[in-house]
Length: 469
Image 1 (cartoon, rainbow, N blue to C red):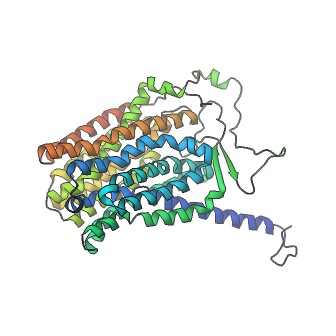
Image 2: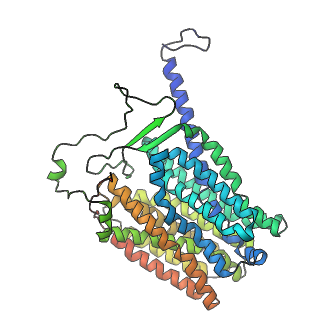
Image 3: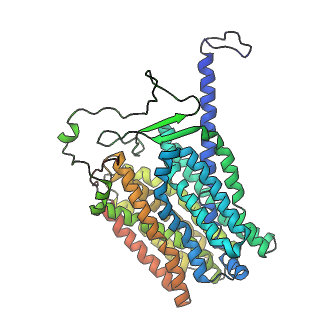
């Protein structure tokens, strides 16, 4: 029996109602925190390319320096992503995410304090922090709210895209409105520390939780209706940690499988995660992931400058980049759901690569007045590529443990490949003095995406791997 606020016994079910209200409030805080996290995961990156010409004029940053600056965040994604899982096992996902938001703000403030000396070190700190947010936020969503993971991940992607769009749209207007001098550069570089600190404040209620990976599920796929493989997890809450009858905390476990079922199905024995290096399919998934990231970050980094060289104003160039970002969101959400309904995804992948190629060519070579339409088309294609790349890491794995290993393999190597994109385009632009050859090289990258996407889209899986330890 529940109790009223006066301490007298309340009607039956009042206690349960109070718990439901508390649970609802907790879920609301978690949602607000996730959306705030996501909004900060691209803003610090997409706000830079629209002001590259201003960085050149104010800080005398060369084209080579701009290329390195554009490549640093992507390189950090590849280098620091592997630290996410060990840190989460030691401290819990919530605390690592909270710390990453604080270090993100610190990195942005560092580069704004002395851009001439600390622009690159501050960007490295910010890029490493975003790498941890990239890896752990989707994982935490699936562990904390498995029954609503599809909805929450969709909202997370929308918030991420919204942050990217807003940052690229307002970077130049802020620079111009504040005078366009050295102080404007500092403000433009450090502005995004404010939403990062606000996100850290919104995330602070989650720090009392400590979500850790739990024991591996028995061999075999555990696919949710949305198509995502869900690993078992353990969730600790301090205070009030859930305990079992014997007093020990009980991690969530997967349903038991019938003895011999995996063997009867002819499933090969689990191998070390290193065995993925010997799987052609794993390399095909990795190639697709890396090439789609290379294409995205190369266009993100240099197309604002390309448009300004073609006669667009700095504000117009930033708006065109924002339009590309707006196109990413719907296809990144919808294409994986469509892919899940298909036996294989070869034709789906090929179709979207053609859309990407048309958008890319039209954006670079069609009249400037048509650039908005082609940038939207390019955004649609890039969003579909991202959605398919993430989908492949699930669909091409036979079980959740293998999916996690394949995702880590594809993303760590893929981001290292992608970091060459901004560098390559900057070098080619400097060497040729124009944009035709850099754009045709990007068209070649899209052709390679088509081939790797066709191979990765086959109805096949990589060999299962065993959980380390």
